[in-house]
Structures are given as structure tokens and as C-alpha cells.
Amino acid sequence: MLLADQLFFLAYSDRTGRSRLHPRATGLGLAAGLLAELMLARRIAVFDGGVHVVSREPPGDALTHDVLDLLLTQGRHRDLRTWLAFLGQDAADRVGGRLARADALTEVRRRGLRRTQTVYLPSSDERRRNAAAWEPVRLAEVLLHRRAMTESDAVLTGLMAATGLTRHVLWDPERHRPAVAWIATVVDSLPDDLHELVTATEAAVGAAVAAGRR
Image 1 (tube, rainbow, N blue to C red):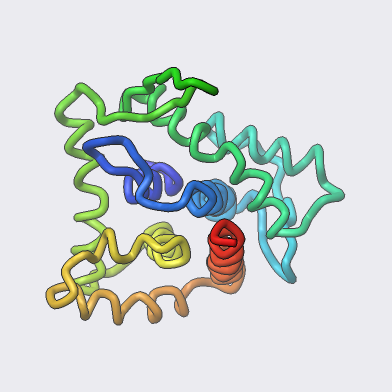
Image 2: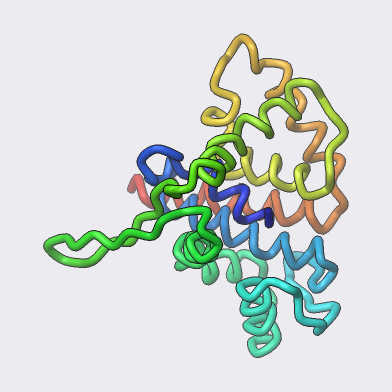
């Protein structure tokens, strides 16, 4: 499962298909997840507040490939915060659509008075539905028992914290207290470019949510 897909399963209820976060926070987090996929695949790097393409080799996933193409065609625009905001506008639909095409979710369009809304409901396939529900449990167990982490899981942990999902994944204040305390260590262990991505995402989410409250 790709990183943005995993973050999607943390951010959305596996029962109702509704986001647990403010829509802007969800979009920014998933945008960061898509950039992180390219960083982990060594296609882009982040440094000094900018996004830099380091390899034009197409990644295997179609959505990640689309994002890389966009970065290439808009090469003069490098500011990381700008890319997070731009990709965040439709990241939820693009990642949700990728999961729907993989039959991991069911895409449903609901007509309202003013617009049609797309929601992503649990798959009718029990195995896939259980996989979606298991993702936050899996990450919570990894953090709680301080198991050896992949780089992808370490980034996922950072984006969980940056977007405000910690309380939804580590929901038990008593049982999960050691896991919450471990998050900072995990984030600090990230390579500089991935650490910068997580930090920028946290700042962007904070600014977006604060603006929404005004």
C-alpha cells in the first residue's frame, strides 16, 4: 500500500467514509503523502523550502506519475508550501479515486442542493474493508511497542502528527501514552528532506485551520 493510501485510511472513518479532519488539513496531508511517495522513490528531493526533481524516471503508479509530470512541467515553481496548497486542492479525490480503482474503497456520488459530493465508503469486499480498518490499528501497535520502522512508516507517523490525526490513531490516553511520547523521536530520526516535508506540512495545516476559524 502506498503512503498516501495509508494516510487516507487514517484520515477517513472506515464506517462512514467521512474525514476526521478539517478538509484543508486532509488535503494538505494527502498532498504531502503524494510528495513523500516521490521522495521515497528517489524522484524528488526537498531542501531549502523547495521541491526539486532529481530523476525523470516514471514511477510505477499512475497518480504518482501524474504528480511528477506536473512538477516537471511547472519546474519554475519550487516552493514547497505552494505545492502542498496546490496539490491539496484535490488530493483527497485523487487518492480516494486511486483506492476506488483498486477496489479498496467504493466511490459514491451524492447530489446536494448546490453540488455533487463524492464520498469514499468501505469496500464491499470484506478482506479489503478489514485492511482499511486495520491500518490505524497497525500503526498504533508499531508505535506502542516501538517496533523497527520502515522509512515509509516513519513518514506516515510524522504526517499523522502534522495533520492532527494522533488523537484518532492513539485514542486511549492511558494505554497509548508511551506511543505518543515516541512520535517526536520517530520524526527526529527522519532524513533531512523528509523531516522538512513533515515540518512544512504541520505549519501549512496550522495556518489553514487557523484561517478557517477567522
